[in-house]
Image (cartoon, rainbow, N blue to C red; front, side, top):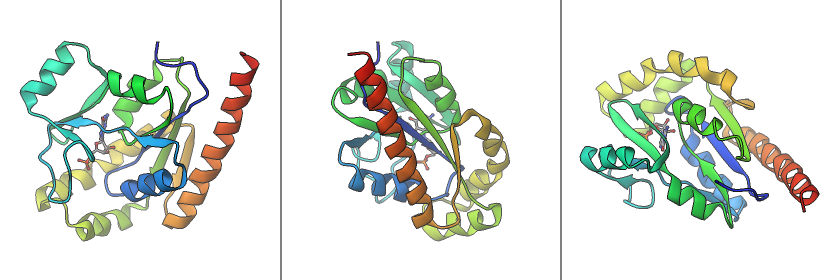
Length: 198
Ligand code: 5GP
């Protein structure tokens, strides 16, 4: 069993380069009870990334071993690399904290199958024309990677229907305010239904 408490799990998904990392950091700063779920990945770390903080960076062999042992709640292959969320980490964190997941639509689908979760699914979208300049500006990917990420946009946004909330990211502050409202509303809802079960 995953959890039956009032703590909530918020998934934030978006096409690559929409500004999700900045938003997740802002959420964590404002809501001290939120912990960001640190995924495992086979991707090579970027220069600014820290193992154990941004991701747990592991080899393909190690990742496969974790799959075979059934250790993941969800995992997906994205741009030739694997990304996944360990059961153990989620089960421990949710006892005392709310959790924020930065995962894609494939992982969201898999997590949605666990219907005892207090899952709130948010999809963040941006104008396609803004996206390429963002991807180039953040300067974290090679030309080839930028092309791949940009091309995945059309496929990615087809999954918006699997989410509870869609936010158009025209302006980061605005977007953050909408996320605040969603979090606060769902915390209240969750507390009420938790109290009813006591
Ligand atoms: P990046 O390589 O830019 O850090 O992440 C690429 C994509 O992988 C992002 O869309 C991010 O949301 C997704 N991602 C990161 N961790 C996970 C995970 O554990 N599971 C899934 N399904 N997607 C993830």
